[in-house]
Length: 147
Image 1 (tube, rainbow, N blue to C red):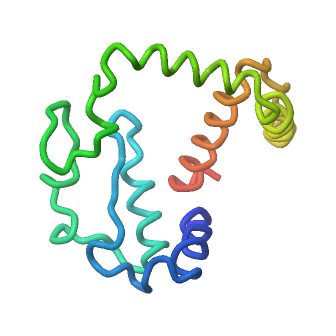
Image 2: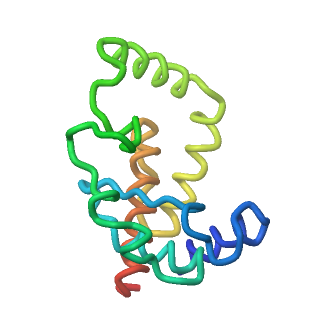
């Protein structure tokens, strides 16, 4: 709910999205391997102050399978970059690992999050994964009432 409220201020409260999110203004996507469909549904309810409907988001239009079809987001279709992808990923990893952000901002955020959750700071190379895991746990626990 808290994340949805933050999103409301960012999008609806700022006027970027109209109150109530008229049909077609907000699209939903949850990767099936992440199992976060309930989180997405709850975020939509907070953001739009209403529930998503089957008329607006029919199962056939929101499920993503491995077969590309019209309307499937390009980033969900594997192999779009062909043989260039590994080289591009390596370039991105190098740029990230040599950046000020990686060496200072990300490491500081990981250390702060570790202190909050009672863990030792992660290895420098694991800082991003650690923050991702902390965020995933916080969202899942909040959405499922685990506290």
